[in-house]
Image (cartoon, rainbow, N blue to C red; front, side, top):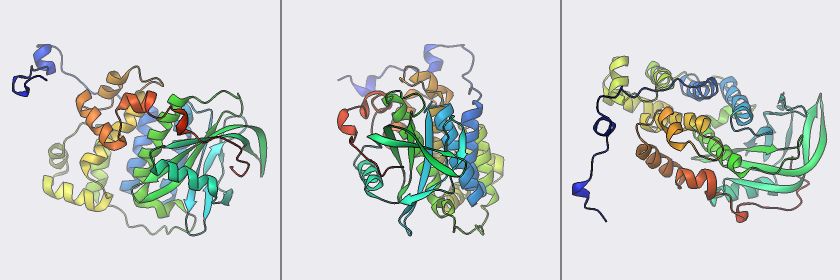
Length: 326
């Protein structure tokens, strides 16, 4: 092992002196929309905002992750039910599924238990694959259904379901891994506002302070900003800024900034993780080492292992008939 005291400097300024300064790439519309919506929850939380986040997550999973069909059901623990939100129709269009619900059962319990054990998604085979046609639910095929738990720091929030009912394509494990990252980020964003996901949620949620709205707006535009820079732009002390944000948003500014960066990374990385460094730098991380540290702390694995190998083992899947799955 090399002597750490004799490390060789590889800063960009050292290895490429005189080169133009590194700049942040403009975010794509998809990542901007998702980041803006999750940020809006901290700025002005409401049931309508939470619902827009869920719809955008479904559309993000199709447009960016390239799931063929996807839908999100949220857990109502009091009623022991799974409630529909937004899904995908027979023609791969976004459909309103708020009128749907089913009883929380063994399949959901297993999905959440496996997620807590380290398997963020589970696949069931020989399942009925459904679509909403008007006011009726139709089975449009049978095949595999992927179930990815949406877990918050305080427990399960819901499940993202996906299938390939229109093409009958086999499961793509790289896409499932990216979907798991999306659900993890979604769970962190929604957890402080979990009551807003349910129909009986109160709409009288107290608006967040101006400092929180200012931080989220600035970081969505530029996730490289430091706490000192944010404090200066908002005309408050760094100490007041960090304390107020954590009290109101329920996580630190550093953690929130990293969540935004990970969301942008998810949009940029390709399905086989062949452009990791490019995606990392375009997402606002200062270096791959910084990203690697944040990602591993967040997901417990290296980025490449998570995206390509970490959850592609056959023991990561449950198989068999599951006629009670929706």
